[in-house]
Image (cartoon, rainbow, N blue to C red):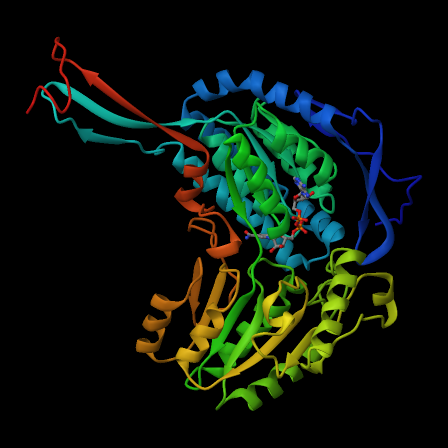
Length: 502
Ligand code: NAD
């Protein structure tokens, strides 16, 4: 890939009202490669309120025809979109690695999750179940049908640049909604690939609108728009809380998928090789930048020391590098701000009394100096009250805590404001079932790491990780549909419920 600069870089566009167009401001922002920070991948339009206004207007005008398109036909279109994502998988994965850093195996997985979600949506086009319920009155029929809401606002983060938008956009479209999509500014190229696949696959122009730009401008304008009745957001708890306040005032439906502080417990009877593989993948996969990343490792005291020794030895051997290089196991952090935030948490950990067992600094050997690389980092001697045990770090930093038994481990795992993912390694089936009952989280893995969601199962968390909705599988369709209750009285006379039949 030739180096490009701001002057020579390709200019990309928004997709509004069926056309690829620049932002009304005429301004662009840079998209840079986090593995080689001097490499500009492209320039993307800096959208604002006026662009959102046009996008919502287009989506609104397309709604009536799209909602009346039979759901199985909408499903067939999404199947074609899935086929195109499959055909373009390698190109999209490579561009995703270039713009946000994760290694190719992971960006291929990210695209695959989008393909899986498309094929699931096709099936749902022939289901989208309502219900029939007996009426309490004779000669009367009662049923519940699902209907779309209208224009759906979709706001997404940078860590799963294709998978997360597809989790939201495929169910929203299948259910008959139209879309205004604002991707994170670190991953605009993947968003363009996705919208191209939607359009090429046959989603009618105007049904999908893409507006690039900052959260404060574009995101805010979507949330505030009176013609957007439903917003689906994945991102930080701080931003999500603000959205909840604004959507609450406007009585809009809002689905939130927010932060995590996920823990893996390893008991003294566990398969330690398996638990070690899980901890390394959970903590350092995606450079720790997953909402489900393992951020706390809770070890039984009987295996603590030997587990930590092996963990540190393996963490130090992980190969950092450009995600396009097949030898790389851990890519860079997404941008300089994220690098600074992670470095600051290492200082907070040290100052709080935790001991650094490995890592702790920016990695700068050779070509790594060109990017935002950070050493896989393990803290030991962490106690539950320390900030590194409580706050989401979103980087390759693992805090190790020590416990004496399962009860203490579960209590420690639950001692957090978040509740997304969780994991327990044990060979004791009784312990596993107690943990499945007592862990407070949206997702629990037994003998697997905290990461590994599959597209057809509900995904989401409890406590400050969200507001009770679930993406993935059939549950995503609940976010994007209203229920309408319909009574058909074929008795030919007035029948008064609760009165005439008593
Ligand atoms: P972020 O909250 O900074 O941004 C998310 C999106 O919101 C971006 O598109 C951003 O531009 C937009 N945004 C920012 N301010 C806004 C505002 N005021 N109004 C409307 N939109 C606004 O999060 P991020 O840094 O992109 O992603 C990392 C965070 O996302 C982490 O906290 C992580 O845990 C979380 N996350 C959660 C899940 C999940 O499913 N629970 C999945 C992935 C990431």
